[in-house]
Image (cartoon, rainbow, N blue to C red):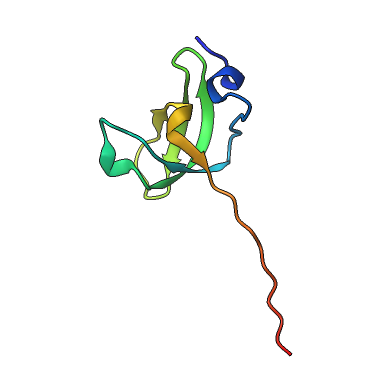
Length: 78
């Protein structure tokens, strides 16, 4: 089984990281949902993901997780 590093390539997920679910074929209704990464199950090569919508965490392949990043902008008025 691949390690978390091998499964994710050059990017490793960390617990607490926000992700967007994409590319699921068996549960396409979950694509586009957001969640938070939990632990990596090395035996299965998948991350536990807790969906923002609630429910039980699911084990998902790293290929189906896209990291969510936020850009903070400061707006000023004259």
